[in-house]
Image (cartoon, rainbow, N blue to C red; front, side, top):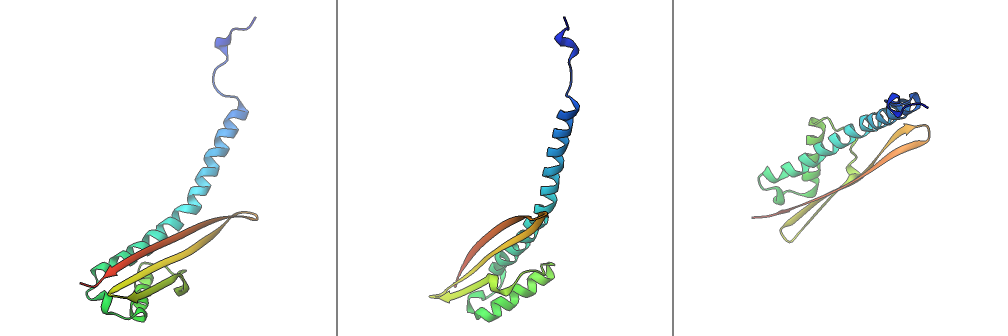
Length: 124
């Protein structure tokens, strides 16, 4: 009769499973991290409008131009101006950004990440 103390560690199939899972999640992270870093840049550009003097006095076209210029400075090149909505009314300016990022993963499997940000600025 064999002793159970001799059986230690994982089998070859167990190691392959663990390595596959580690590789899969590392590959997924390599695809997702740049998407979230770019979104962080977009969000910080919109939030930085708070420091802009008299931002609520500017026209939506001026604000859009300012945002797009700052995005290019921050190396965000794939952002389309259609993603940006600017509304003014009653001393309040609302800037909202809604967009999706589709990144191919393997074959016909894609990663789809949706973002939605909204910031309101009130004139003082």
